Image (cartoon, rainbow, N blue to C red; front, side, top):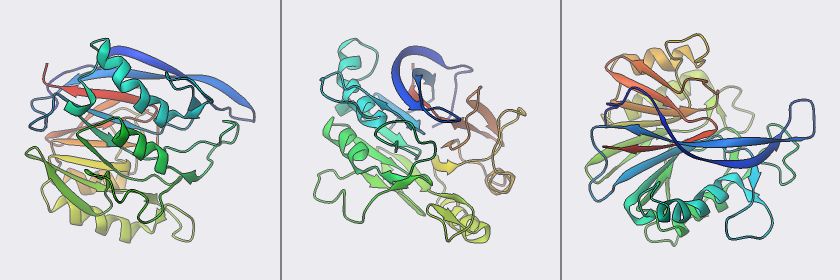
Length: 265
């Protein structure tokens, strides 16, 4: 899956509430954008990639506010009816981590369980739900079992879907005594393992830096990926004003606080 488009085109946006720096809550807008790639998995018409959905929003079906990721999953059918997205059963979903928010959306960096977000995309009927966990995500073992097909979180593993190989590494580099973190040598060893599988799409939470100064990332991760960059690396964790950058012969797409539809046209 190689990026062939040079810019992301706006499709829609979703208003939500998020924690404000310094305390309290504020309004945010999650953009839905489109980017052209040379191929998508067989049997799909597009791939939706998103991450860092740290907020709450109303579902189009009514009721109290839900996690932003749940609201996004609930909007898939609505946007498909409007012709903005393929039908969910023709859509693969890739989650780049950090999908939790305090229910009151007034605590920055809150950590919590994100099972309901993964289940919401599965319940929407998406052809594939995969991705990684961020440093603020909790997902109990077995929480996604029993579904067919079951969502497939990745951390050091890979899968092939529709002729496209996807591999993932969750968490971030940091103090391993804290949740969602690994010491740098261990984290890079996991990254090396998945790179050896030759993925078409590499899914990370913490990603490499981009070409521009504002495209911040982990240089050690960038050096590792740059040795044999996959066609597409998806990441989040640090927001990029410009979400796309080249890396080696491939591209990095940062989906922190955005949702991007990958399509062939």
